Structures are given as C-alpha cells and as structure tokens.
Image (cartoon, rainbow, N blue to C red):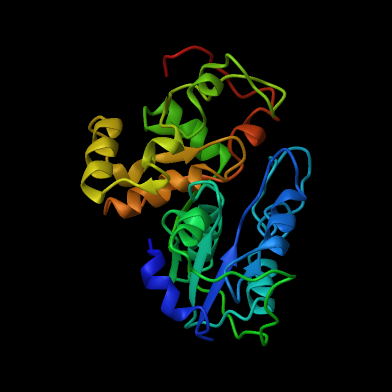
Length: 278
C-alpha cells in the first residue's frame, strides 16, 4: 500500500507510473469518462475489460487473464520500465486497483502498490488533478519475469475442495449464499468455499491495519496454512483484493483462481452450493 502523502511528491517523477483503474461493471464507459473529467496528474488509464483482461471464450470467465506477453506490451505502452514504481488507484476501495497490483506481480514486477483510499483520498487532500486523455509517456523497457503470485486453475480448485483446502469467496454474502446473482447466470458458490467479502478488508474506504487483517484472516483460515488458501470471486477481480489484504497482513502466498465463479459455472460438471454453509 501507499498513502497519498507518499505519492504526492512523485507525480512528476518519470520513474513512477500512476495507473487509474476506475471501472463500473454496469457501465464500461464510466471509468474512462471519469478519468477524462479528472485524474491524478500524469496518470494513465487502464481498461479493466481490455487492458487488464484477455479474450473471452465463453468458458474462461468474464475477465480471463491476458497473455503475459500482451500485458507486458501494455505496460511498455504506458511507459513502465523494469525499475518503475507503479501505483494503482480507483474510486472503489481498491477493488479494481488490486487487479493491476496482482497482474504486475504475476509478471514478476515487485515495485507496485495500491493507493490507500484511492481517488477519494487524493481529492480529500486538496491535491492537484488534471483532465483529458492522460499522460503521453515514452515507451518503457519492461521484461516478463517469474511470477510473484500464485495462480490456481479450475482443476486445482476442484482438488482443493475435495481435500478440504480452504477456498475463499470474495463476493457479497447474498451472492455467496445464492440469494441473488446480478451478473452471472448461476447463483451460489463453489462447494467447500468460505465467504470473505472483500469490503470487509476496509474501514471508511481504507485498508484495516495489518494486525487486524492478520487476526481476521487467521481466523478465516481456521488452522489451514494461509499460503494454501485459494481466493475467487465472480471473475477474478475483487478476489485480488483479498490476496492484497493478506499481503498487507504479512501473510503472502495465497493463490488466485483467476477464472473464478464465472468460469466455474461454465462447466456443468462442476458442483454448485447455495446457503450459508461451505
């Protein structure tokens, strides 16, 4: 994580790249419209549906991972180098910025942080903003390296469920229980999954303390190795928020099921459970 006070002195620093990740699942044009209206000076804009996702096949979820080389090309277009400090922000408690944080680490880039409090915190501090299409940065020299985060595939999730390994569902409790499903065609959760709504990582739009997050995730793990946890959500976006929260809590190593619920239900052979129990 990074604070507004830590970011402010670096907005004109060519070695830093600020990425605006604002998005709206109900209106894909809303994020870029908000960016053009006002954003952190020097920032570039990341499109969740395009820049931070790959091609959809109908069976790989709503936000499949992009090809690593393709994503690296996007980073180069944004002017990111191997030694760049990336700072991601959004206006949604870090739920979309965490996707960029996770993807950067998936490409092996360690110098990446999420702005705590996001756009609201930036504006509340009376910091400058600019409008328009964003910074024109010189192309970067970015290399793909070994991943710094773990990825789980559907077969890993199925094995984890069968072996009692902890699966963590980041969606709202009502979606987890199958009482409502506003996006995907099937309601419910993966059998064996426990619920940890990603918003439970926050207090007033900012991340809870490392100590509090550690206590909560330790209780959630219920004796399982925290590094053995597998996180999922609807499409692999907000689940990254739980992975990030565990890093804040000094509990790294848990995996992200990138295809998540929207990929899981595309295979009719996969089990579905409703109700409050795992």
